[in-house]
Image 1 (cartoon, rainbow, N blue to C red):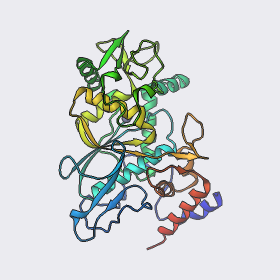
Image 2 (tube, rainbow, N blue to C red):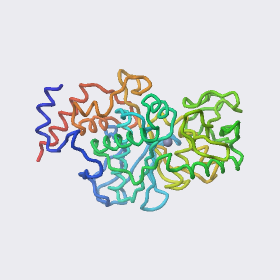
Image 3 (cartoon, rainbow, N blue to C red):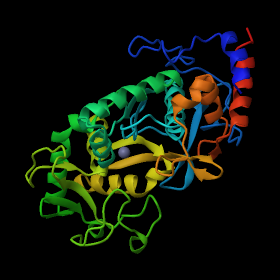
Image 4 (cartoon, rainbow, N blue to C red):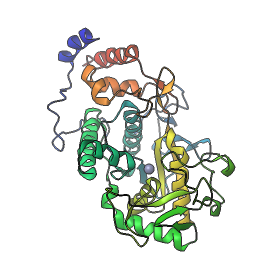
Length: 385
Ligand SMILES: [Zn+2]
């Protein structure tokens, strides 16, 4: 493997070094211009990596984008809510460590969608958040004796560096939880006022039984649901699936003042509040990895509809996992490779090509053989004048 790389790297026409990439000064070599062009697009070919397209050569009116919508469980033609404009929110990383290639797959997938929408001529507002207030961040910061917010800021920068390596365009906005407490608090207040949440000893819980549509996205029935993985089971909850909107502060944890006492937001509320702040309660595309369908996105729908009963996201888009020996790659399973580890061995565009070599909804199995094959292909692509 390393022999191949020694051979390939000097021949690449794209400059690359993990040491020299500077955030803010890097200029993207964009392959697409943000204007509508007439292009050949084929129909529903399964070999297409990320997005299905259908249409004809002759007329831009027939350039259609097809997306698999998780909520309808159907492949649908993309129609924006406002002509010529698209609002897209993609759940970002919880910044407490270097990102792994499961994360890379999410953001490369949505980068392709973002570029393609722009190519079709849409003015796209792409919002991708950072979770910088979270149990995992607090635990890591404690281990390292560091302030949780500054630890998180550091890893947000590392993440953005990875995105530069992978040639992902920067989103229109990258909101962080710690910068949006007023919006989060306002939203929780409205959910309580509208009768969808209750307060227990400084904690605020969303009452899932108050929202009859709960489970529509994931297809889960309420009786099948267990408390979310990130929320400890709490006997004070009215229903086991009720989830925290606000958590009372524990000793030594960062906290913000609220009408219910000092504390911090639950995980799900941040995305409802930040997507509403940047895109409103109704917008076009909400995306993320498949593991976010339940509970995260299910809970987001409940929260947003509890505040605004007209809230509507047209397309819920979820990408498949990166697997290792058929198991999902994740930090908690310990079977992950960081983006940095992989691009230390292979050119980042080889990783990008590998991630796009499979339909975005299907699982993709990570292996050295696959990466070497992607390296070969990217090498030959760049040899063509
Ligand atoms: Zn989210």
